[in-house]
Amino acid sequence: MIKPWGRLAGAAILGALVSLAATSQSFAQDKASAEPAFFKGKTVRLVVGYGPGGGYDVYARMIAPQIGKHLGANVVVENQPGAGGITALNSTSVAPPDGLHMMIVNGAGAALAQLVGSSGVRYDLAKLGHLGTVAASPWVWLVAPDSKIRTPQDAMEAGREIMWSSSGPMDGLADGAQFTCAALEMKCRVVMGYGGSNQAALAVTRGEMDSIYVSDTSANNYVKSGQNRAVAVMARKRSRFFPDVPTIFELAKLNPDQQALFDFHANIEDLGRILVVPPGVAPERLAFLQDAVKKALTDPAVVAEGERTQRYIDFQDAEATRKRSLAVVGDVTPEQKQRVIGILNMK
Image (cartoon, rainbow, N blue to C red; front, side):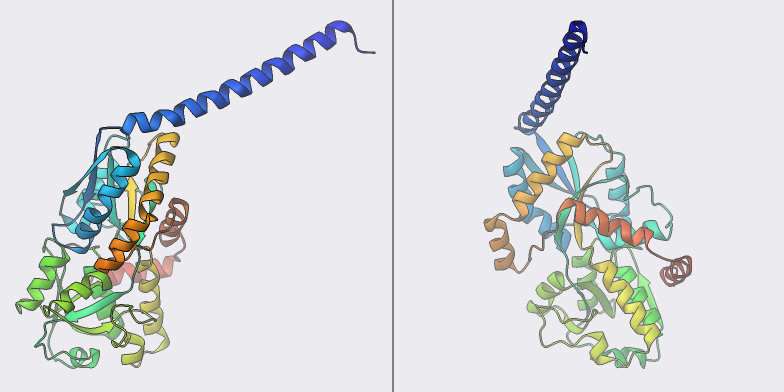
């Protein structure tokens, strides 16, 4: 038999729990609804780790207005070239976690640099806030229009070092060139210090360098302008921009080990161009940023602009981006890691 005071106590507890749940839900809703008010009229910096004119800069300037529209803020692009984007990413990793600082990152380069413990790396991909993937595409080997290198075999039989231009040790340009040279057993030298892919491609055009390894979106502009010529697409599938340019798998007789090297690097390149924020952004604010990025990158106007300019949007959400980034860092055997270190330390 339940005593009256027991019934009263139970009712009081139940009432308190209901009240607490309602208060918690209301508090969460209040915090979520506060985010638009926080961003309204504020300036958000979208950092690019390369100089103006390159692929990352062009993408950032294309998407910034739409992200700003969905945040209710003014998003400005800020170029911070240095060490192939590592300098800017280090700065991003220690920026105030207020949601007013985001960066478009070379996901492959950032993951590789952390994987091999590159000198100067101060960020941790596991701790950064992931907002989503802007685009992912295969990369292409380019040379000057009048270059004697017309096929990979020409470079392999050149009898001299093939000079590759890049901006930093893990910028996509450099690590792609190093993997290519290691797989094809070519004599190479990777020259760093160019401000971004735009400057690096011009160095090839002027004859300062022999080759550049660049994303197909950037390669498309350089080839269309007559500035460079495509030698090979560096993945299993041909590029949508270069349907008549064969892949490295079609052009070269590759043994299983060589195929494995090219496949490994191509899988890393699938990380693409990702958007991140500093660690520690409050969950409600991070969710609001992620939602704004998703709305911006799936906005028909942005997708259409990407198609018009052939800077295509290949959006992946924040969680998919985070998992792919961490897989590169965590799903590599010790033997694979040591081999990657050896390749990326090639001079």
